[in-house]
Length: 149
Image 1: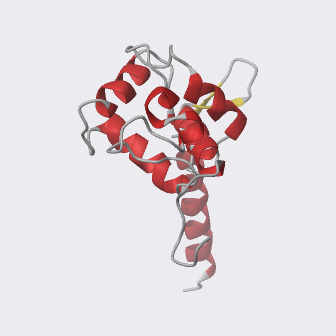
Image 2: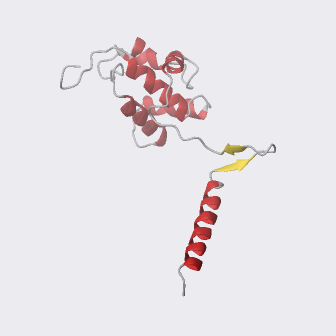
Image 3: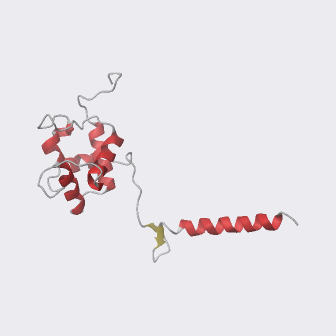
């Protein structure tokens, strides 16, 4: 018995498996173009300029307050000492923290309602969260690391 039929069968099975998987995340539009049903956004896909606009948008959530109303312009000087400084914070930390407020993994009387309200209003998705994270991470603030940077 030769190994060639086995190799051909494995190649065909692998090819069919890849073809089946490649269509599971998307669909074909009428013009034949492939469109994705969902988009994966990482913490580093944010745009700081868009994030700056979101951070100041009083219509972002349902409360009529913007991010900077509580965290201060650029996130550097919160109005209350118990509110966190966002300016200069790690981008991935900000991204995941906001997602956790949205998803229920992190709770705070004000922030949970703010984030969930913005999501329910259709004004904040993962791209918006990444944009906010990019903006606040690029701001100068009092935070530093163990090396004084």
